[in-house]
Length: 408
Image 1 (cartoon, rainbow, N blue to C red):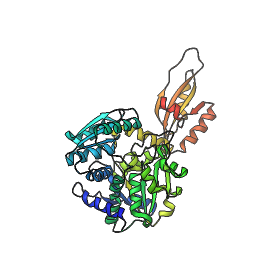
Image 2: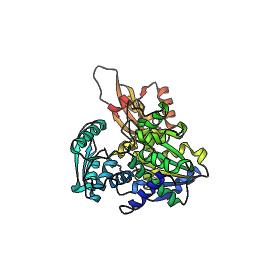
Image 3: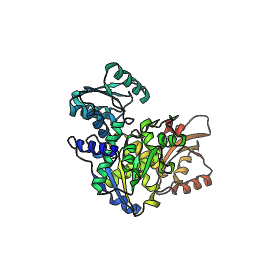
Image 4: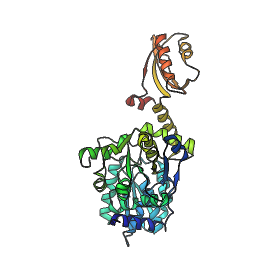
């Protein structure tokens, strides 16, 4: 057994004094769909509803006598650090962006209690991180990196220790969400070549794929923060060193809208609440079904810190991805009966989800914003054909992200 595996196993054993192992559950629904033996490693059921508590625990236990810990986080890492500060009776100072949802701030306060203080600073995480590091250097505390730290990586590897023990062996494939790379690097290092690791990133934060292409960590020009648990603009230096030998073909990239379909399905079908990053591994299984058939697969559901105020947006994005909801700008003649003609074109499964129109004086035509929901994507082909036949002029703006920000 390597030194890394020895340390990871020791971390896993030490954790049992703080919280139990998270469940490894076979999912009959996914197994039947893909013809494989699919298991979910339920990190969404940890005390802080994510795996981040593992790295925080291991890094903090290796600093005996340290009374002050500092971190920067917009969510899960903050909650893990807060939980451990309260458990260990040490002081924690947590920096969070001003734009952090109140739900995450409140949960961090709940976990940390009187042992922590929260500083809200910076509109973007990079600003928050710089402020936290500067404050830590001045006050002499120990800075807890969310992923780019050897002790954190080692702590996250405890997840793999549990998988092997709970499964009674090594799975054929492990599907891992990637943010900064702490968990994926730790799990991949534990399994080595004994198991095939598949890495999944959100389209708006594919920093591992960019680093593998360049041969070194690079900073992304733009990051989409929707998948907040994995929206990282640059993979860690230490984590990349452990992942640099991985093949590009083993890194999958998922669009943010596509991830929403899995959040909705897992909630409706299984009653499992997953945050966007936690749904990455489950959604990715569909892309590898050709070579996992008959194999044992473990998907790491990395977190379940989902703010239900986001549910309408998640449903909206899922419907647009599936092609059952579209938005149009319709050029409508300003005369009696024109609207009725349009309504008569709609099919029995078509429903108007949005309609905005104001008649304008001295104009022959007016623009109408219309949102249509239907039961299956092919219904829109029929609708297009009837609109064309009736001579209506329309523009589909569903995928126009710039325009959609203002009107959808």
